[in-house]
Length: 435
Image (tube, rainbow, N blue to C red; front, side, top):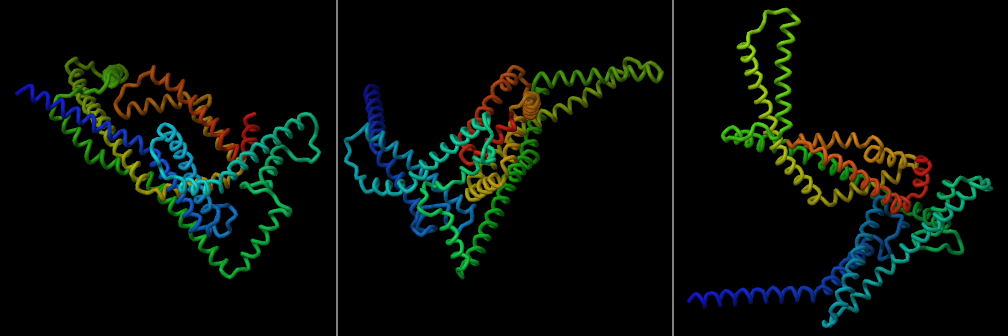
């Protein structure tokens, strides 16, 4: 009987293993189909944006019917879908090379994806080439200024600004006539159109609505987690922890540092009693009276540190609730998050190059500057006491020695990778201010 049970268990275990293997094998075989389908859906999303908002044409910054903020949202959506297409096509090619056994119908989908991607591929390439050309021209002018005076009277910063606003933009080569002439006639035509005023008002209303949405989302992002943390701490977790500590035998002090602090406070109180007796020439306090006052002080200190311990434990749970509330606000309101990102981008783009450089220098000096280790030390010690953890000096010094260096590297990479692309003159100003 037992042998038959063992055989049955082995057989069922083998069948389960075989089913898992088959399902895994099917999942691997269908990976190219899934990757291609996701890339196809991203291409359809780009096509939908073009059809609904740009009359079936490519998403471009030259569209006069939208404000820069609205155009920026559309461009960000297109870039996100293009990155999805790039990633999924790479996965499709890799998994298809691993397994060529399946006969997948993908020609039509790939043709459609290529038609969408080809509209924007030259745009990114030409923008990169324009940026490289601007950087080269800036370095050339900088070297010439070191040797000779600039005959045009322009500083390197002015030269970069002129080059960055050149005629090669968004992958479009300059034709026989300057593009500014075409834009001027297009602007005049738009102003003469009877519906231009209505379009302008609609664009203004959309921009105002988006700004209000961004501000509301920012307030929600701050207030909701804060209220969730405070309410859950004061009305749920702290009473529960306090009740548990009163009804169970638990340590009074969460760590040795709390105990040392209590002993130091008790010893200071005893010395104050002796000092008061000597200064004011009061009769000598008897030992029994001193012990009685010391017992009262010890009882007061024990209540104080018991409250601190309960508060530290409740902080752990309440902060976790606040973190969940913060994540829920972001997850449940993606439109507000997109509006906030658009508003921040608009504010950053509207700042002058000197203001951008000043903000970058201020942030880097605060977090990774010469005096930043003292700030990090105070911050980590406060964080430890918030959760009732004894500060570990070795960990604090190791954190200070590594984390600011990582932040500095990330900031330099961001300046090199992104800021030099959107505002090369700000990078030049930043370099001059650092020097």
